[in-house]
Image 1 (cartoon, one colour):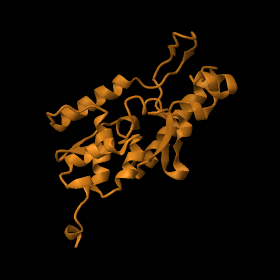
Image 2 (cartoon, one colour; image 1 turned 135 degrees about the horizontal axis):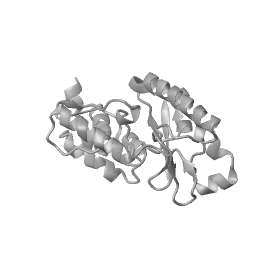
Image 3 (tube, helix red, strand yellow; image 1 turned 60 degrees about the vertical axis):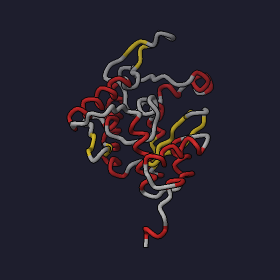
Length: 208
């Protein structure tokens, strides 16, 4: 869900289609179970730009829904395990160092595909993550139903996230860290759409 130009874009069904997270195109589909940290109210973004890990807040609004989704996802995983079909792809170096990792619950994709598919490199038949195009189509349909005529893609959620944080008065350095920008100048681009003057700062006089 995101608000733009006074209208709200909503996508239903899988939480993957609703979570307003500042992730790049492939970030959400590739999210692993162990990267959703409910105890710290955050999501770990592994191997982000520059191959660095970063953290983004877990929206409280979707906390219970995501917990319920993971309960159903674990049931699916256990059913796959009973059939000895619970292997998941993990980075090559990790698979060599921790040979049991591909079979562990923590490494499973949060948003897995409905069906199994064959890995063209290894030949293994596994349940991959949800197709990125499925998210794109869902967002496009949500935009159409909202009556918006602007071009809106899943990546726009990332831009919306940054803009709303700055509108709420968050420090630009904090926004920079959440987005994973190496240079704050990249983050400052968002201040131009706020029309709030230099650095996106509101004059103290306006808060009196």
